[in-house]
Amino acid sequence: MKNTATLLITCPDTRGIVAAIADFLFQHNANILHADQHQDAENNLFLMRVEWDATGFTSGESNFNLDEATFSQEFAPIADQFSMQWQLKLSQHKTRVAIMVSQYDHCLADLLHRHKSGELACEIPLVISNHRDTEALVKFYGIDFHYLPVTKESATTKDNKAEVEAAQFKLFANYNIDLIVLARYMQILSPDFVARYPQRIINIHHSFLPAFIGARPYHRAFERGVKLIGATGHYVTEVLDEGPIIEQDIDRISHRDQVEDLIQKGRDLERIVLSKAVRWHIENRILLYANKTVIFD
Image 1 (tube, rainbow, N blue to C red):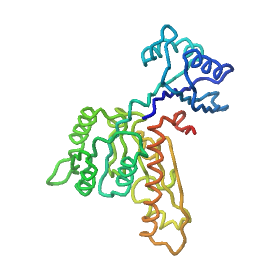
Image 2: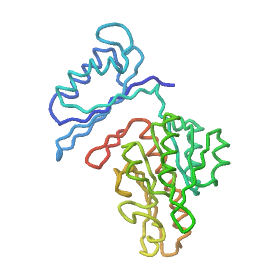
Image 3: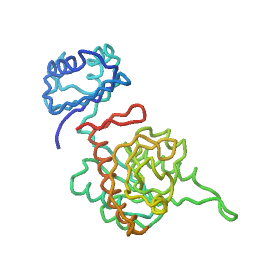
Image 4: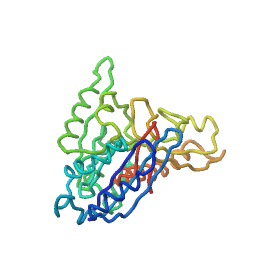
């Protein structure tokens, strides 16, 4: 497994930022592997991702490898000078992912296969579902499956959503989860759920947002007679289907396509879009600002 460190930076745009970062890394014996940046003139923002070989990355005070705590201390003068918001990510820490799913298994199956083949460099210790349809698939991959059914309030049953989410929170804590992926989990998360995991929940929505938010978008697209359908991977916020968009893709359809055709074509898009969104997150390629994302190469 590669041993790299990645620094993500957001700060007001001004001269000297790149030079200061490059000099800092040079002084600490870092070999830069990738560097990418973006300036947003409208918001006067500078955003940057720089990745370097962490082998031999040493403290300015000694020949010992630079750990996260020491990095924070030694990088602080530069961060303060440029008013930076920054994150340091180490490849040695693999992102621990929880997948949540309902009955449709196409996105789940794709993620599990890509993880098994090594395409997604993360750990997937558990899958949570409100149905048992995907239990056999999950266990085939040797992953823990947790069945937490959600009941709606009726004359004979009580709404148990709060209890289910409490159980989910406990599982996330027990498994040390870093990222939650909604792989067609057909439940709306509570504001408390979303607030607990800011910028750590990725959802796949089966339409090209902002068109056709909410439920049954393929049916609504068919009724509208659209010529393009799409899928959107986005971070989850309290406002339904309006979180920062990570990735989107589309497919052309015609008057010959029925609802079932739209659904089938859409599922292919959903798989690809969600896997890209998850991969870019775990590779620390995303920075968020103003309800938008920057995806670094």
